[in-house]
Figure 1 (cartoon, rainbow, N blue to C red):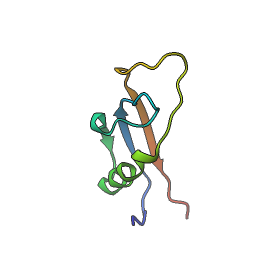
Figure 2 (tube, helix red, strand yellow):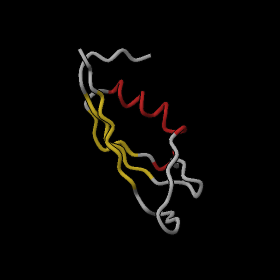
Figure 3 (cartoon, rainbow, N blue to C red):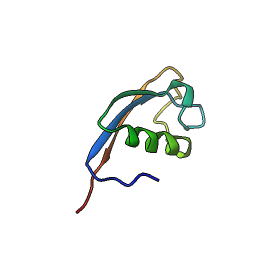
Figure 4 (cartoon, rainbow, N blue to C red):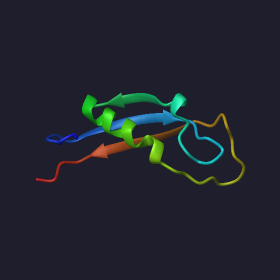
Length: 72
């Protein structure tokens, strides 16, 4: 378990499967502020689910910025 003590973020790039889940083999970490946050995001990626607008495009890349904010 990660106990956050500073704000941070992770920027990811990935493709989706035809079922809307993250294609784990395509995940690329573009930038991050803390390695622990990268680990936290990687643990939950298999649970993420997305819908499509229009037809499924297997080669389309998606980017997501995950922000971690410590509320004191």
